[in-house]
Image (cartoon, rainbow, N blue to C red; front, side, top):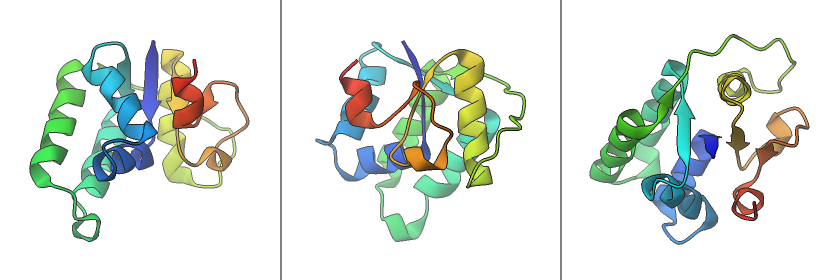
Length: 126
């Protein structure tokens, strides 16, 4: 199974290690899930996860980013022309669509209604 994780999922996973976003990320660590990412997605992860206001542990952030780069599936998506409320979310949508992967997000309203766009809870129920 493959999935693209919206940045809010990684933030939540790092802030609440027992929550559903962390359980989704653990599937990746347990090799039951392949995370799909692009250059833009990785840049966003770095930009957001290292923000001082989030107060995330830098060693944990580095470990997460290294694991994604080492074991994830890198893709180069084509830009989608589908209207999006937040243009920054376009890269997540495009990567998931290209890789035929689920898109796991805490903000489904930011994306078009697609059966493969799921909350962490919905994804864990698969």
